[in-house]
Image (cartoon, rainbow, N blue to C red):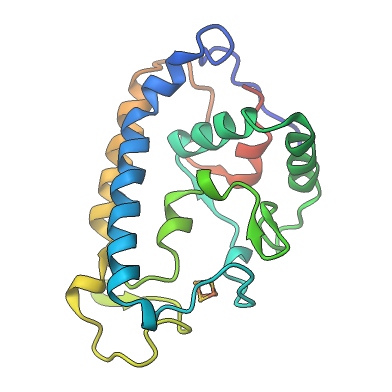
Length: 194
Ligand code: SF4
């Protein structure tokens, strides 16, 4: 996988610029973290998620919005060079059915900068498929609570709408500048050359 160049997003010429443009995304992350924390605290005995879990939930290959990809790439750029090289090497070698390249010894190498989907993963999410509403969650969680209370459920549509709006605003701050597809894989994000 080749690394892609995002030459004119301004990361090297103006260090504050992408950070300012990412502010809405980081605010959304804070809100998502608060919601997740509240659920995790209120239903601690119902949640099996932990570092090193053998459930393999990080084996899903995801695509993300440009705002998420740039945020991940900016966070990676701030890491020690040796770790950057290590992560990029893993990203180049990843196979499409293998684990996320950021998963190592049961933990995320960029846990503090992980994506929103990784922050909410495993928790109950209200979703809709072909007109049918359902609550999706990891079956290791909430095994002894049926039905799942409303206050333990995250509204996926609402979250996705907020994320899409934040992404639209981010992209609009760089008209004709962000040379990115509407969706970017995690591997591509890790190989972005800012
Ligand atoms: S979501 Fe499921 S598989 Fe992933 S860490 Fe939580 S309990 Fe384990």
